[in-house]
Amino acid sequence: NISAKDRIAIEQWPVKTVFRHAYPRLDINVSKMRNHLLKSPFCVHPKTGRVCVPIDAAEAHEFDPFAVPTLPQLMRELDEAERASNDNGGDDVKGGGG
Image (tube, rainbow, N blue to C red; front, side):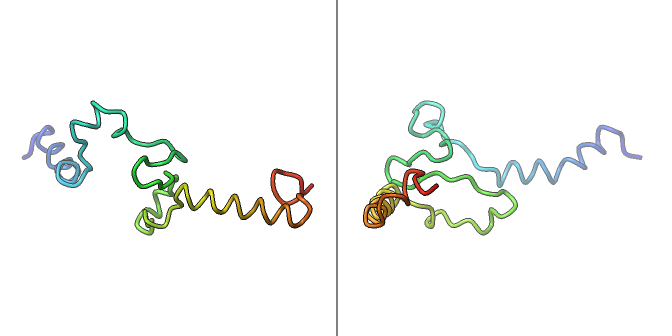
């Protein structure tokens, strides 16, 4: 017979093994330096200029981190939208369309 303590240890073994070997590890700089902290949604990464976007955990396997927008890309898109709005009488941007 297996003791209750051993039964629990056996049941938890797969989870503990995955956690120990596959769970992302944080390095020492994460706790020492603010620029290494996890980012809030929609903030901009200081080196890549990529915007941190929320993802659906159920579809994380389909997430492409290189497909997220960059700050320069968003700035260009906003400039283009503003130019298009000005060409169309100004009602397409900034909530003026009604």
